[in-house]
Image 1 (cartoon, one colour):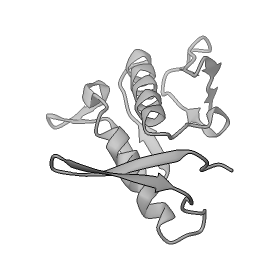
Image 2 (cartoon, rainbow, N blue to C red):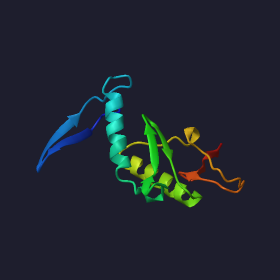
Image 3 (cartoon, rainbow, N blue to C red):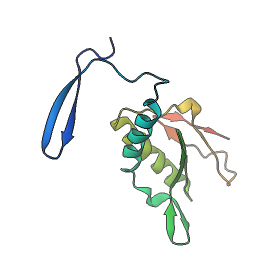
Length: 125
């Protein structure tokens, strides 16, 4: 069983209450999208977005819609850094990025450019 020996806790201020996890939220449950977005936002809030693009003095590092995220950078190195950070922060909260569903694009024609996710090459489109 997936939740065997699972545990969690609710923290309010300095108080913590342990919870024995017996069931999870199933796909299709009305709580699933809300919980997913909350956990994803927790991960994204921990990313250093300074490698984004500058728009009128503000740095824009990502555009999000549900479970789709566009990472924005002016350099290949910046894009790789953002992807590495997002993947790391997502892993820390139990989310994983599917490399097969991940794509990237550039306005520079350089066939040697590659971006890696978990040591696998991401498809350039």
